[in-house]
Image (cartoon, rainbow, N blue to C red; front, side):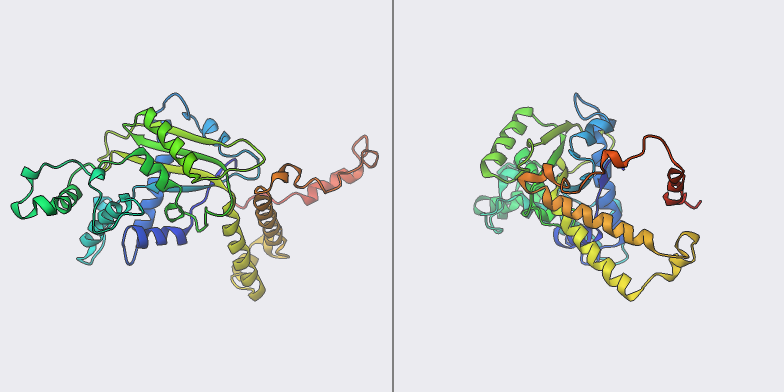
Length: 344
């Protein structure tokens, strides 16, 4: 594949529990997160603009090297649709939906702010005359926050969206982006956005050094603007999707290798594979796949160093005088080394 979007079930469950406040997320909730991300990743194709309007251009900027083409995703703000809450049988599911909205209200406040003092700039402005008499004056900020929770549209700044997209808690992969560096990064901002706000947000992110890029190549920080679908109701004026190629993906590969070694050592789940003809005699396909994942993990680790361009050059190439000038009988034996065709 030219590009692979990695989604981790562990990270999806963590987001559903921590961010959306769902104690026991179901498969329907997890699939809702995945569908939101994948639908947003192709929104520039369905509503094309002056850039990122085809898959080739979208992938080319995110995969600077052929092997390092595994992408991480993040989305903000996250909310549950109305139909996702109707599938639960317990009557507290509506409370989960409300706490999901409250989770976003807490998320929009700055890190240094107190939770008991909501940031009224993130919500629609509500006049004092529209508030109950008991909630005017000193408690007006609380009333505005409560009333804004029931509004149809929330105000969200571009800086808040782009800042939250770089936080590890919004990543849908169990990896810490604070370790390592970005190979490439793409933010797809949806909504009515002024390009000047995007430029200011990029300057703020650069000043705060929220992201770090590879030392051996140019920094690839792309932003694509797209309008939202007019057929779908959105609770937020601005939302964003992050598609990033980060070296911390090697943490997920390392966990996969450890889990594979444990299963292979115990010989678990092997009988089902031995029933297939290609695994009847040996399990070399699994060993080759493990070596491929281990080599990919090492390459992502080396991508964090300045001498990545020399990675793999220590292997001695075949000498020219050892290669035959014309095909020989031994070349026909290469067909035996080819992997068998897929079983239909």
